[in-house]
Image (cartoon, rainbow, N blue to C red; front, side, top):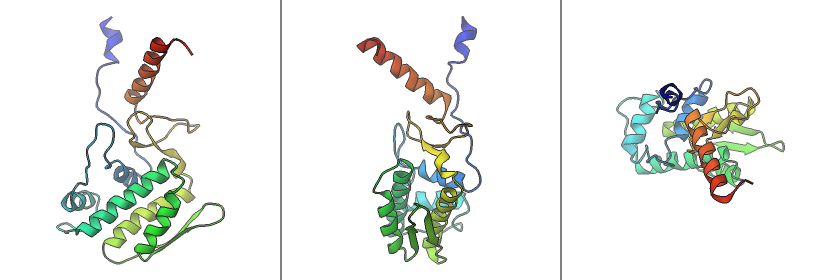
Length: 187
């Protein structure tokens, strides 16, 4: 019996990384507060540290409240695109007009973008460029929000049917389903 329980022990969360720069974008999306998570980018200093750790900002950079607000806004918009929010594309186009960059979606829904090369807008433009390339290469479709915890994960399954980031989250979903079935009867 103990051998059967060994697989149920708590294991550290492990995520299969997304390919290339999409992993940085996935990490950025996962800084948002959610199920059992607190805001990882609560201050401009925290944002600067996160960006410095990924070589997106020179060491010792300081960021303003306006820049911090922009970063949280672009994260919210990209998170909306990940979760298939129907208004996210319009929000992204409006946000990019503030950055004085160009983004638009053509008639097929393919995003087009002109990269900004100045200041902090360059960092935001890099994140948007990663999104654009992922969308064009269809790897964006494999980036999903976990149904159990809400974290962004890259679906490595052959048929793109992944619904959760780790097996632990899958166990939570299945256990909840079983509890509902027991409580309300089989359906």
